[in-house]
Amino acid sequence: MKPHEIRAMTDEEIRARLDELYRELFNLRFQKAIGQVKNTARFREVRRDIARLKTILRERELGITLAKEA
Image (cartoon, rainbow, N blue to C red; front, top):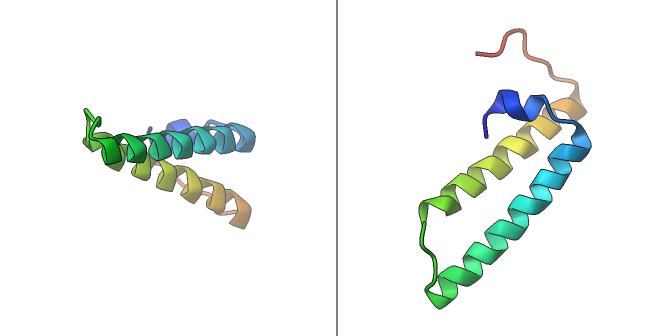
């Protein structure tokens, strides 16, 4: 998920997506424990998406805006 895609979302949509990703990460951890994980790179993707979502939410709380998005 790219930052410009996240910035186009509302706060409620971001929070809903965060909930989905936390549930997915929880399930991935269970699958890892029982040896059923097929795509281990998904751990990294999910963690980074969570970080991106939380960062943009925090930027909005602080009123930080970007002059130009790359």
